[in-house]
Image (cartoon, rainbow, N blue to C red; front, side):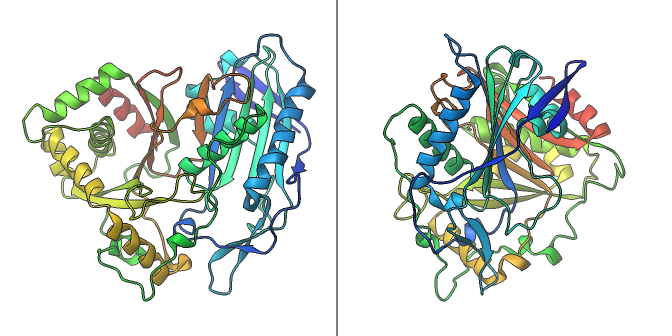
Length: 440
């Protein structure tokens, strides 16, 4: 298999081998595996790309591939549901049949050095370059037949390589996906697992009878018609995905802007940047002052439950919190106004909110449930990317692909720096305006 993508003004050509199935090293559990309601909401795949510099002393391509394949077979014994396939239960919700069929693994070679592919290229050109560093099944497939995970190792001329990984969001959120990567990396280095996965998801079953104490009506399709549709002013325009770096100096400026009028006394990098981007996006999209704009925050509830989810919980432990505001109010008021809205959206997520959210999905059922696609913000800045050390050191670069439409995604800057990479998609004209607003 062969594919091309842009790097600079040249063509990135990647030759891929035929995919092979990696099964668990030993026989594992059979039968069906329960997925919680939090696993039923997001249906796409968590797709990540890790770039590694060449190892001193080199190493053959066969050695590289063997390490990944052999360690994958070992780690799947602990994460055996990943080797299964989705099935539709009698209640209309998805479950996993533990078939031990395995995950797909692909080997590939690139025609360039790794320094020509970085996080900017991965995100700005995600439909081409990133698509070559990840394995995607050719053509439409039945979701019940698709592997729950794929991995591709691409070797560059310089000896460096890329690991492209895709995990079904029904199996893991970003935190659990990173836990899996960490365990896989430890296994590749011949180390014992720091944290063994906790696979039991029944701790997130809905209550019987369901008890909903929060108004989640905004997540029903019929309730979202009044929220502004961003596609109207830019009908037919190409959607661009861009990466913007906010270094520690820019983040400090934003936090000072948020607190300069004295309305709020403190704020985090996340709340300041989220509020700033929310306002700038409203301006870039030329929203009318009376238009309602909806911000969805992805909130981790692992520590908010009582008792908290156990360390190593493998599955989705996230909920969404909604902030609604008039575009005109967001733009005319100081940044502190939007920051306070974001802070309140986070504060409202507690034990009862999370349990009500789970019960709400139970009542609506997956087939009737929709997340409104207005502006979704998620952050991976607290994830330990450095733990993805397979024996070549920590990744030199890290990026994500297949991001939800109308979303903002925060990633840590490379090499341990304290900056944040914002990944955002907008129509071409709006993106041009947004870029001007980013000049702090």
